[in-house]
Length: 267
Image (spheres, rainbow, N blue to C red):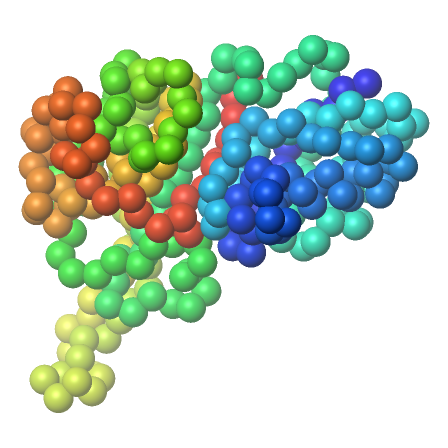
C-alpha cells in the first residue's frame, strides 16, 4: 500500500529535503532511515517539495510504499516516537497506488517571515530574517498585487533551475504586519532612556504566497524584491517591468533560507 504523510520540520540543522551525495543530513534521509527501521523494509520516500537547506515546513507531503501491517493512521505516533524532535509527522493515510505528490495539481502556500526592529530576539533568529531601518510596508502591499496571475517568472528564478518552463500562476500574495515587543528608545549616549521616553514597536512582517508551483528560490527572490520596494530602492509600479524583462538581475536579492516556511499543500 502507498502511504501519504504530512511532515513538519525545523530545517535549521538539515541540508534541505533531498538526499545529498556526500552524506549530509537531510529530511528525506532521516525519513528513509526511520521508516526502514520501523517497517523492516527498505523504504524510500517521494517528497512533494524539495525544500532547500535551512528552509522550514509545516505541511510538506511525501509518500512511500510498504507491506507493513501498521494501520495507515498509526504511522503518526509510531514515527514520532523515533524521529528526532525537529521532524514531526502530523497526518498519515493510505492513498492511491499511483499517487505521486509532484505530479498532481496543487495549491502550495509559503510564508517568508521578517523581524523588523533594531534588536532581533534570539528565539526569532532561526525562523525570521532580521531587518532594521525604515520599511514602507504599504508600498510592499501595493507591489505584491502585481505578482498575482499567470506570468513568466524567469526574473525570479535562481541559476541552476531544472524547470521545463518558468511560467507559474500566483493565486494570492499578502503582506501582513503585526506589532511585536515594545523597545524603549535609547538616549544620545546609547543607554536606555528613562521613564516617559519614546517607545518604538518592532514588527513581524509576513509575506504569504499561494501558487500552483514555484521556481528555484522564487519565494526568497520575490520577498527580496518586495523588501527593496519597502526600502525605497524600487517602486511598486516597477514590478510589471521586472516580470516582463525575464532578467534575474532586475529583481531583488535572494533572502536567507531561515525566514521561509512551506505552510501547506492543497490537493
